[in-house]
Every structure is written in C-alpha cells, then in structure tokens.
Amino acid sequence: MVLEEVEQIEDRNLIDIRPLTSPRALKHKLPISDTAARTVVQARSAIRDVIHGRDMRRLVVIAGPCSIHDPEAAVEYARNLHRAAGPLENELVVVMRTYFEKPRTTVGWKGLVNDPHLDGRCDVWEGLETVRRLLLEINELGVACATEVLDPFTPQFLADLLAWASIGARTAESQTHRQLASGLSMPIGFKNGTNGAIEVAHNAMVAAGHSHTFLGISADGHNAAVQTNGNPDRHVVLRGGGGRTNYDSASIEAAAELVRGEGIVRPVMVDCSHDNSGKDHTRQGPACLVVLKELRAHGGASLMGLLLESNLKPGSQKWTPGAELERGVSITDACMGWEETEDLLNQVAEAVKVSS
Image (tube, rainbow, N blue to C red):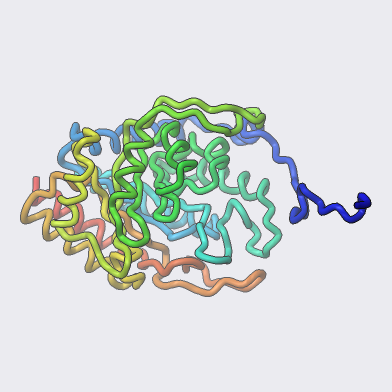
C-alpha cells in the first residue's frame, strides 16, 4: 500500500487548534478586587452555613437569566437584584444566576464564553475575558454570582469569582464533572437526571465528596495531573424530569432521606423551572408558591434553597447569528420578568419569617 492511500489517523476532522493565554495571565489582566473577593467569600460562607445547618433560618435563592448574552442588561439586572435583596438579608441569601455555558440537546448558541459576539465566530478567548470582566463588575456591586460548570477547563479562568455552582442534569452522571466538583472551592448543587432520577444526583454527591486525581490544566496553562481533597459542601437540586415535577414535600423529604448518609443537614434545593414548571416560565411562580406553602405548614428543614430563571423581561426570543435582539429577553429558556421576580422574593422572605 502506498503512503497516499493510508488513512489519516490523527486530526482528521479538526479545522484548527488555537492556543489560549493561561488562566494566570487572564487573572493578571483582570485581577479580583478586594470588594469582589469580599462578596464571594461572604456568600460562600453564608451558603455553607445554610447547607450544614449552622443557619437554619435563611433560604438560598439563586435568581437570574437562563443564560447571559448581553453584559449591559446583566448589570442592570444585578443592580435590581441588589436593591431588592438588601431588605431581605435576614431571611434570604440571594445569589445571581450568571450562566455563561449552555449544554445543548443538539446544536445552538452555546453561551457567552463560547460565542461572545453571537455570530457563530466562537471567539473563546474574547468570551473568557468578557465573562471575567462581567463577573468582576457584578461582584463589585455586592451581588454574588452562580453558574453551571460545563467545560472542565473554564473554572481555572473564572471560579474565584463564583459563590455557588451547579452540575447540570446532563452532566451529573459524568465522571469528569464529579471529579471537577471535588476540587472546586464553592458549594456545589447536583441536579437530578433529565428523567427525574434522584439517584444520579446522590451518586454525584458521594463521588464529589471524595479525593480524585484526573487530567487538567495548571494556572499557567500547562497539562497537569490534578489531585483534590473532595468537596464537603454539596447538595442536590430537584428540577423534575420525565414529564413529572418533584417540588412537593414528599419529593423533598425523599431526596433528603436518600442523601442523609452524606451528613448534609439541609441537602435539597428546588429548581422551579425546567420540568418543575413544564418548561413554561409562567408556572415557575406557582411552583415556588407550592414550596412556600409546604414551608409555612411544616418548616421544610431539609430545604436549603430555590432556583429561579428570571430576566428583565418575561419570555424568550429566537436567536440567529447577527439578529437584532430585544434587550432583557432570554435567548435560551423563557424566564419570568423582573417585576414577578421581585414580588416572589418578597413572598419567599415572608414564608421564611412565618416558618421560623
């Protein structure tokens, strides 16, 4: 057989491999400020206190866009959230949902890190810089940030600016993400599977609580073997699945009982969107109110928090590369609007007062 007839055995389907500047270089260019660091540290501490039962009164509320595509609108939302959360600090630990990476069922816009210009060019380095700058600005307002961890390299560039993270329903079963979570410095929530199975989240909690060694990158961007201690600050996130909801009190207590062996006092967060709302943003509020009713009636000692998909304006809009978009409207899952969000935050805080 002549050489020309031999199949290419490496890089056959690659177009390009572009080197990135190291995480250390990005942090040097955009260093965390004292104010931002204080926001992160205080929020992480508050969330840990809730998870481990040192704070049995407050609830954690993660509220914000399904995904952020417009940094200016995100800052406006953060200012609104800061104003609304201040008077509720004795009842709620409010953290802004700042999701920049989107897992797709097939294809579509994969988030601000991957495609910051929303035009399909996928300038990842510009995306990382844009996102880090935005996280700095939001934290400096005094608003802590939360995200879903998707790409295992992204936390090296951004994790110092995050108070909470989730591992999504599609990735909670992934060994890569369980190992990654075992080394992250913030509290982590694991979502139940897309079919509603809570065992996936339980197994993820167990795995992430243990030490692991895996392949990764160093702060200088070099290939590395990463060794972790295990993350003690874990909980499950109930998001429904398989066409069924799981925000009722029986589901919350069943989940708490399943993970009781992990020693987490308050191990359950309810995601009021996704299958718990039937993917209808107008049903997030009613789902949340059911949880609050149970909280008022029974105390809900296992419940540590709620997650809400919320934006400046309700609904969603279709994204195509280069399309003109309405400001403050999601381009991924539909969200509740700000007015409903603010009203719901006040109702959650009132429920906490009544149940205390």
